Length: 390
Image: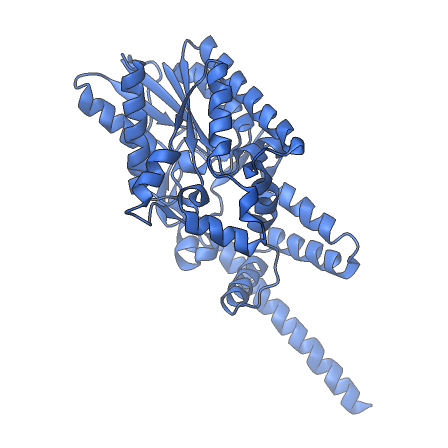
């Protein structure tokens, strides 16, 4: 009996000690300023970058100066990854760039984004002209959110031209899901994809123990920085050792997104296609109210540009390559938008041409600086040829 009591006492002391250590870690993490915290623990790099927003669901926090995905992230007082602008200052040409993480410039510095490169090209070609290309891109945005941004920032900036950076890789699906209510910032300062969480819950619906564990795990990660850090380190180790059994949000989204690349387009996905067209037409209508023109820039996915990437995904997800066409979706959208009087720049042909001699245009799914420069040059050439600059 005494041995049992000693065992229980030892176990209780061990639990109490573990709890005390976790409490100390938790308090310490919360006392460290965010800038220093992310320098010490890369796990917190994307914390406190976004804030919830009634109009678009979420947005970048204003006046940020931090590191995001390995690069400096500075936002202005309106929460844009750009410098401060005086909306009342007279300009000769003002362009508003809408878009998601590609327009935002995930993986590159602010001045390397195609919006800022385009601005420099235009200023070099038209010396003495006051030209601004304002970057409103936000990672994860769909066209519905970009429309909300245009309605909010368009009246403030009063652009002459609106560039819509349309990422062919997932914007159709983003519009189908609906971006405004899809993501939100939770108590721990991180942005969460509610759609993905619901999909995981659906998959675990009949696996009660796993579902319960999932919800407990999700709650603790949202409420405790210490738990978030420890869990993040464990997940990284499991991934490195090749024994991770955690859900991949990319796999979930990929499997729902690939049917858009089937040729012909499956009937059930035509609704998402038509929804996309209708939103872009609304962007055109809103731009016209401001007296601005609209150009849609089709940004291809890496697997559209590099056949090896495409083949790898087909193998990974056990899909039949013959059912998919990497050019048809771009052509279909361009033709449809052209018929509605909307100008389109398709970057796929140029990037494919460049990719023949450079296999590093993309990194972790996003453009490197060279691809941004190519995009800016192509946009400039189109603007010149179409006589929509001056």
